[in-house]
Image 1 (cartoon, rainbow, N blue to C red):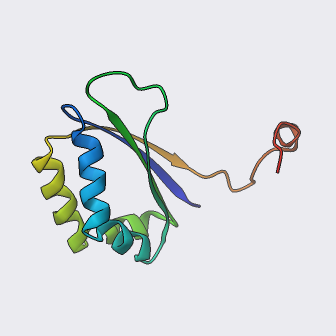
Image 2: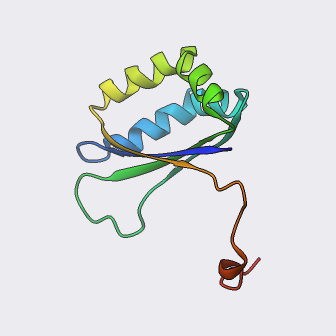
Length: 113
């Protein structure tokens, strides 16, 4: 049962983008991706975001709740928290649990592999 967490970061101007850049350049992103149970850790920027305060989407996926709990107890969380404060970011969070049965047959006809 994979758990996917979508976090939307927003700050003044390019603060969210600068946050992701620093996370990447400092190697924090690679450390998180290497953690046991991490399945995905990727940043995305909305295609048509014309607001002066840019939004950044993080898709963060874990094998299970135990992996998330271990991540939250890791040294990376202190670094993430420090950078969130540095860039004065605000967040919205959505959490999804994977469908163990996969994609229904009725939906598969709409998907091109």
